[in-house]
Image 1: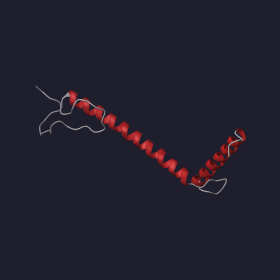
Image 2 (image 1 turned 90 degrees about the horizontal axis):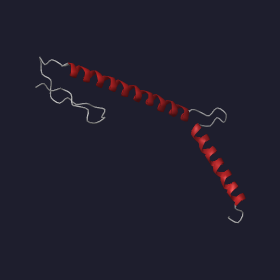
Image 3 (image 1 turned 90 degrees about the vertical axis):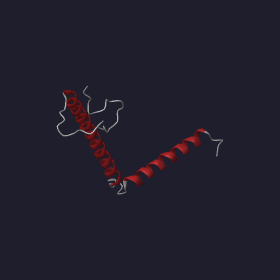
Length: 102
């Protein structure tokens, strides 16, 4: 009875472990070749996805650190000031709608 070198897919883990060590002279079956090909395709897809995520994160970080063009302030400071302004407007609106509250 021939057994495959690769485990059956029980989970969607990112790493596959070989069941037993291949020895010199061992020939891969068609099932082994197909399984290895499928795993390589999955690995390549994961690598592309992680690379894309890394590029997106680096771009967001770059945008965050870059200076805001209109104010000359860093984007983080501009975002904080915008947030404070919005919160001040909300407090003002609340006080207008609820004049009995102080």
